[in-house]
Image (tube, rainbow, N blue to C red; front, side):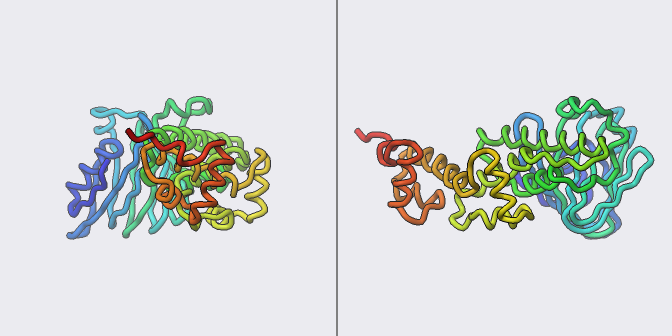
Length: 297
């Protein structure tokens, strides 16, 4: 979905209804501005960045009867304040908070001033393996956990993944949300390191072409110590630096296969030194970069 910017409540109603589920919107300000940008991750999962001025977005019984949907939504709030109301409960939204809500039941999101958030949307059926209904899980602040931090950071960093990567990222988000739901319902924090590493790996894969990407920067991004990050990767017999290099090399091989020069493929995938790139490529794939390029007639 292409980014959408609007300057009226009517336009925002159409934009939100098209991006999420059929909704109604109200706002008191005479001048209203809002925008959203959505990334589709496979056939059913979306991540949407939302920014708007003061407004209330709601889904009532009339809309539910006429246009039923069975989606689950997770608001990952970034800026501003707000509230989500559903099933007789109200959860406050502030920077860093996370709250779920269910499109099959009436709900309202109220924002008294400008705000921004990231919204993960997916069908309820993708979470059925948790074995829970959602009536008790919505409009309740989700406590901090390793899985929630990984999910938030992964969802917030997604830009425009390649088609072959999009569904894998969507599956990772589903797995992380399942773990968040299970951990919260069990009354204990979810701390499975494998899911955290999965989220970190996907983020690295998206950022790997940045020549300034280092283990130290990854650790800072995920609010971990460098030692903790190294231990997480060591459990699978690798290091963060080796994983960065492997991601860059896989990208470079794809570019070389499309006919790009060795020097340009190295530059495009974060390698600053062509000789170093060539040596790393030969160690990884047991062939030279130039041998991957298609032969010319």
